[in-house]
Image (cartoon, rainbow, N blue to C red; front, side):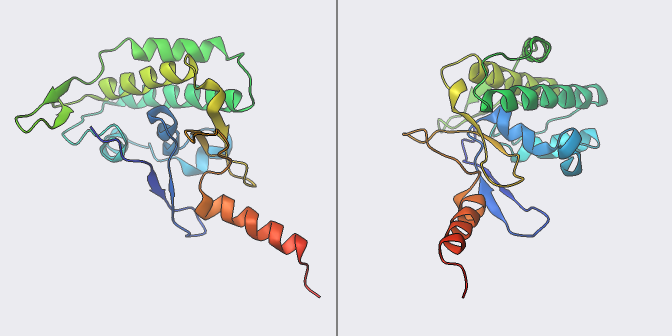
Length: 198
């Protein structure tokens, strides 16, 4: 089981940075989305989802076959999580019931089965299906939106940055997707505003 913190992202400006969304369901939003997020779409074919799963914090390293129907479910789940997280990031506890119903429907499938090896290493029984992975994402979302951390869902405070994350900092004051990106840009902008040229 992989508990790695975050993924390396490369936006169009080429500046790579590490982003830790803090939860599997929020990490899943990095696969793209609808509307403004459509330009980041990564799930065009079932194989795209299978490849992304191997890099996720879920730690599924074995085969993960994905069907066309599972890809469609993945997009539905992602859209629901996106709307729920965006609403939660505003401080609202009034979450849309149709999106909660999507979480419940997809979470009803069996999740991946944990196994332990002779060296006491933990992993998942192989193969993990697309439906099992999506169930894990939906269950993670239910835990997040129905649990005590709902108030810690944030959207990056950077200009035109739509990344959502779970603020796992002890004081609960994280504002940026990454200090190396949006946080640093804000610092530079503040410094320029305080010390204008000339």
